[in-house]
Length: 98
Image 1: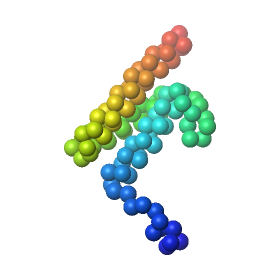
Image 2: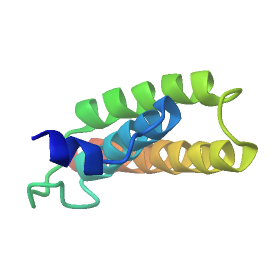
Image 3: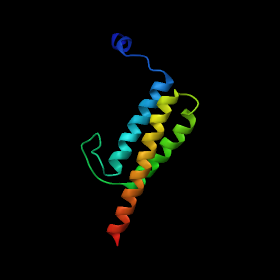
Image 4: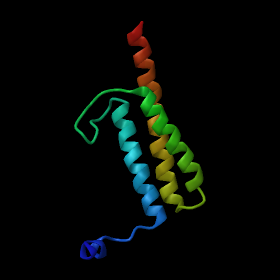
């Protein structure tokens, strides 16, 4: 067990937060119904997508002064795309309802 632990790279807090960010953003795309999730499922749950987007937005505010400007620009782009797609999917779901 100890040998395996020594082989794992030591991640900084920034690395862990970015990993969290990427994981949540991937799940947001899946809950928007635009990609399959890590289980191979594809369905839409806009409430869950919105929760994830809001969390990513909050994390981004904290990261703004704590990550490289180029990384932050990418983060902003991901959140912006998620928000635009959320609005599109929300509007489609409202049209489908009547």
